[in-house]
Length: 64
Image (tube, rainbow, N blue to C red; front, side):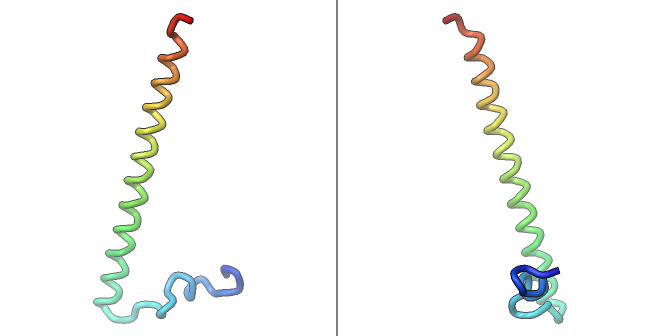
């Protein structure tokens, strides 16, 4: 696999794949943070979509 001619490892790890235990632990923590941020963004979007869907559904029932 490659991304625009660059190997995936070079794209994800521009400074090289973490070799030491502290570097690997830091990389895993950053990954966890990224996943948590993504999940919270999805939850926030779902909440907003539900809100606007509810408003739209209720406004269609109002008398003209």
